[in-house]
Length: 197
Image 1 (cartoon, rainbow, N blue to C red):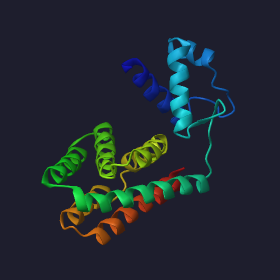
Image 2 (cartoon, rainbow, N blue to C red; image 1 turned 135 degrees about the vertical axis):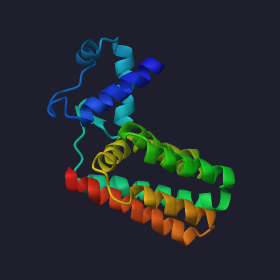
Image 3 (cartoon, one colour; image 1 turned 60 degrees about the horizontal axis):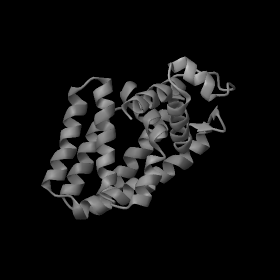
Image 4 (cartoon, rainbow, N blue to C red; image 1 turned 90 degrees about the vertical axis):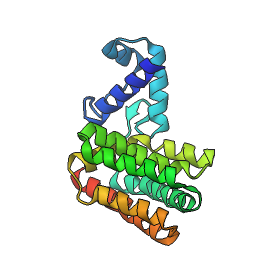
């Protein structure tokens, strides 16, 4: 399982970094040889990447800016619902966990900041407690990773300040403010990343 996870991360990173030609078919045989593994883990990783809209029919999926807007619309709907639930359900321990991720992001290098950013948003989504919505959110993993990497590497202004304001709104039990803040935050991520694509 660990080997598959590492392989998944490596192949996803290589796809996002432009290692493969967009017109090149990603066959199991070719990838197994390249990554020096058997075809079985390659098959599983390709299934996961298809599930996440990164690969389609064996080729790298090339979403248009409009496709990305549609995918982000789904993310915004899920996360705005998540903060509504967080306002109702999160206790001090949950808020401290969120603040811990913000602290890690501020103190860490790009890699740690990316991880802390992912953990922050994943924690919010767990407030939904709906496996069907969570699975839909999981399908956005590669898109979220691509956008998160851009906002971290390009150092989008106010990123972590916005996280802090979201946590404060949850603590204040202000669901209108929390929803408004998460929508604003994600729309800024979207526009910022599309600018660099």
